[in-house]
Length: 177
Image (tube, rainbow, N blue to C red; front, side):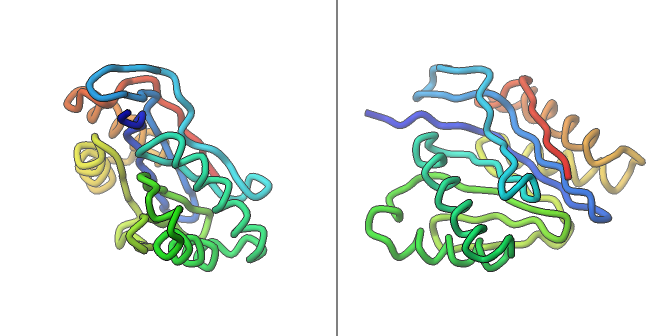
């Protein structure tokens, strides 16, 4: 059976202000099975935000593993992300997980993948999931050519993605630090 997939997550870090947003859609193939999923959560005593795209069951497993890495490394975001990526890539069971994570705190924002990638975007904006390219393009344009806040940019970027991507909806959840 095909796994359920969650899409689109976008994050932005600017001037120590982190904002992550996601739509609420979960699909099974080309069918919407949930429109109000919560794909973003605060971790480590609300000092870190993480969001996922991909297979939903896999993402929940990764959230738990990432939170334990944050605790193990006393909230050091980069160290926890690198250790998660190492485990994810090398563990026989974990490497089968199909999801991606965007995570951040007031000091950094990262994309973590099962290929062992831990990437920090040059411009502080990163997106994952089916509608990610649309959301990313919109966010970058808005960041360069407007005075909108991070929250407003993330919201508009997700709304733009929802207008284009059939796997992205307008039930938007945004978390900030």
